[in-house]
Picture (cartoon, one colour):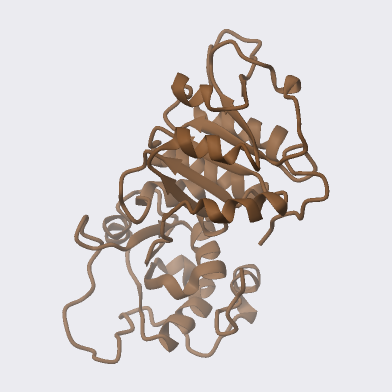
Length: 305
């Protein structure tokens, strides 16, 4: 993913804010208006009319500016973060975008949550594209694993899974039976802590025929809560893994399981019978999909930033 030369040097600015005086400083008492300068003060997103997503919290906003700064339309921050955000404000000023220091009550209203960490960016969301199977073969040749969620999925679960996937360098996330919309909601971005900036998300409507076609390039492994093969019992063919989980904690449907080459389950040792799908996904990604595991085809190129 190429970085543009005009983006702010974000990480250095956060770690050494005194040395991050990038041209124009943020003004604390008013927003930076666009060239027209007309119109009312920008307001928080009004769902569903406004298609911007709210990315809250310093780690999430950091990742957004690192990998998608051109998507940011507005930035709001509290006084305590003024020094850290100056490079971002300078960048937005050059692009004639809005930035503004606000108080705690207004921040909660703009962010739509009390868990905002003193900063929120309103940005154009990353799109969810329809999966083009013609490109899947190339991913498999590079040894790249794939993560597939069926059943729509809770936005918070999707965000948590995206964070884990980004941590382990798993770049391909496919959502099955996902509503025909162009973006994920704010909650997914908040929980992902920036992870959604580093992975590509795709959508399929009919998962079973897609899994059957993926079998030509991937070892398709489904996960269920019922009796199944333990993780150590997966028979490998040398292909990368496409891991299929249910997005709503219920286990994949039997029709989906029948389309998988192997169906596995996590075996616990305590009284709890199951895990939240995001917790199960973290274990499975670590064991099966992380670089250096068998989920990466031998000789495949490691996916990264």
